[in-house]
Length: 229
Image (cartoon, rainbow, N blue to C red; front, side, top):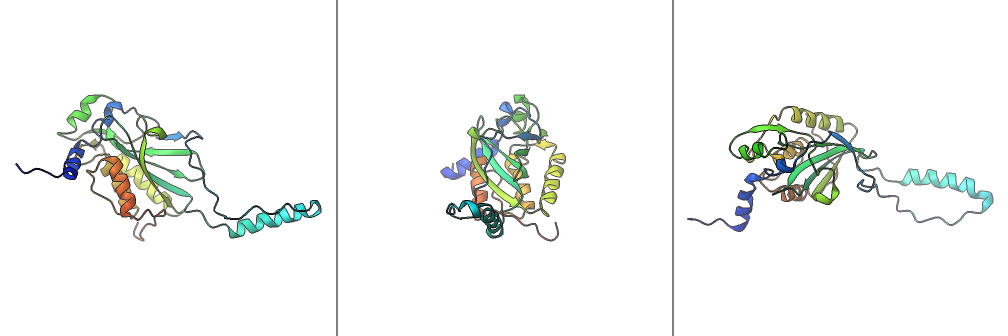
């Protein structure tokens, strides 16, 4: 019998991919509020050094002028909206899903494909046939301690509504989960493709999938939709 190399074994093993995720999966709301400790702060990009303390008589004038100057020279943020491709630990190979929303808000939407209910029956059957799915948040999706990889890509004011509408459409039109076809990495890959990103093989384990997705796209932070989207 021909022996597969180690990497191939790992990829083949990923046919179960998100199988055991359903065992621990508990549905959460489609939208959730991130704890402030988990929110990603926006770093200052002005690059300005603290100014010398102004004299009292000129303090108000200099303060106003300084604020105007800072506003004028501060570079634009990558984008007001984002999609964050994420992977977390689970009972076996992990789970892949996305956060999406507005950069300045703590509220996030969560989308990910997994077998319906927290019963072990659907995930077992899902290795042989398609089983009913759910496409919202599952247990652990909002907990940073379970995170193993993430790749955040920003969107413009114009492109974000189109991407978010596509995500919602994909959620409605993906009624089944299967370990080797319509699984969690396939799901987030459809979103990445719509955004114009290159995507890896969908049978990579979630952590490797997200890391490879970032690598294939050079870690770029902004996605721009094609004219036909």
